Length: 238
Image (cartoon, helix red, strand yellow):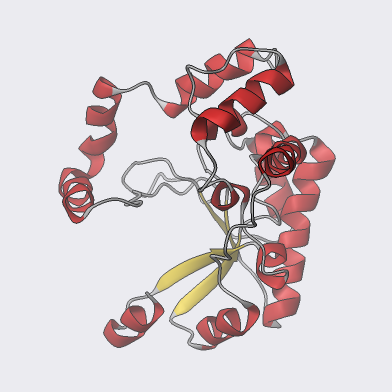
């Protein structure tokens, strides 16, 4: 995408987890892409002694701490002798090239992509602070922007995270709430419309429907918030 942004002079922000980039690692959700869905679900259900077969694995994992997510991934690999997934993410040299272009701003995105609201005060603060500081060291520049992992207000982050960001000098923080940006938008909860992966027809439909996409989607399926709250209740995490 970077050459296209340069060619057409389109400004953008790239949110980076410096630990993932520096260590040439994958995010947890990238690591499970090739896992057998049934086997993974069975492993999680057995681990928590609860039948979770009615829920998608991504939703179950998003209710857990980052430590528990990686524990489950490790157990799955051990049981199934999985080869490590290929690396998907930008490397240090590419990151520095993008930053030097000046057309793409760089923001922080935690170290390990946990769902921050699932974590303790200490871990949430460390994930935020370390990602900002380490990114500043890599870029030799100040970092003013941040995007919350997953990014649903009140489900994935709350005012605790906002306070940590303010302590670290962040000026703007981005959610994934699908809503128009306006003068009343809060600088630490900036909404965005997501395009996401899918066929050309799917992406064009999302672009054309705009603000109405989420409404139509909710008529057909349970919302992510509802699903994850059900799982938390089932796992006695509330």
